[in-house]
View 1 (cartoon, one colour):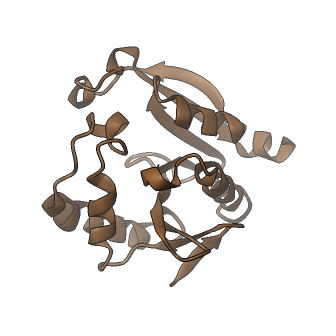
View 2: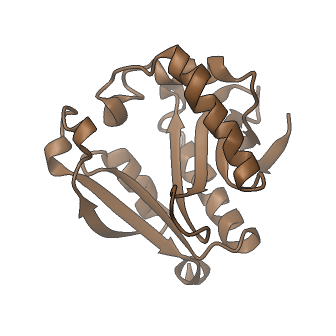
Amino acid sequence: MDTYLETERLVLRRFTADDAELLIELDSDPAVMRYLTGGTPTAPEIIRERYLPNILAGYERWGGDLGLFAAHEKDGGAFIGWFILRPAPQGPLDEVELGYRLRQAAWGNGYATEGSRALLGTAFTKLGIRMVWAETMAVNHGSRHVMEKLGMTLVGTLPTPPDLEMIEGAEHGDVRYEITKERWERQ
């Protein structure tokens, strides 16, 4: 396993071309996809033909330090989902998005906070990142709680993207949290 980052209980690594089935399984769970598609699974061919090639291209684009990273439990090696640390498509390279998508079996174990905290540390100490942001639906209280535990600050609300308006709770919009390097250093 080509380790990108280790925490107390997790190993994060770059995805490979052989990882489509992990992503297909993750995105096939309606509960995992609830706040992303309203529970509709991502079609396997979209993962194989579009998502995975884009993930791999991201490592090339950002030198392997930014992108989407597969997360596995150190104890036993089970795939639990992924974490993301990457700039917006047309955004500055020193402002990156933090996010994650975890299997239901991994929920409630503190993995989202643990993996995200490690990525924040890497972003601010090794990658020259100035600010990290995260967005979620306003009604996604679990993700909002993780962002708050990380010391991120709610900076605003956003309208729900038109293609997601059918999701339950979409009428409440999305929220954006941010944390700067300076604020992170003060924690």
